[in-house]
Image 1 (cartoon, rainbow, N blue to C red):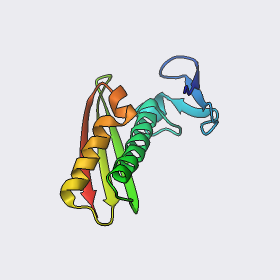
Image 2 (image 1 turned 90 degrees about the horizontal axis):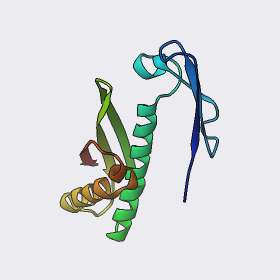
Image 3 (image 1 turned 30 degrees about the horizontal axis):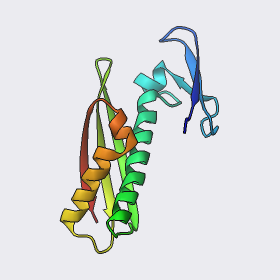
Length: 136
């Protein structure tokens, strides 16, 4: 399987702007710029997209891991924070809140750690990855 996206940029790094389009067109000429990346401008940015990819991948992987362990999650919600420091993406922090009927706290932590280590996005990211997993 291959997926693709296209970025178009016009102008200088600080004053220019661009747009992103994904193969599915979920992003369709979605704006990004210096201000949307480094300030509070309108549009998206690479770090936000990385956070969405990691949160989505981890959460789906956890659903599969829980299912293989005999549990069906009622809900899984993951917030991902990507940190950019001095021009380097240094870390991804996952914050999970879950409702999984019948699971012990120990088994839940084991499944969450498995998903963190083995989701395809975690495996692709060459940075520190941390996880806070709360069973509600």
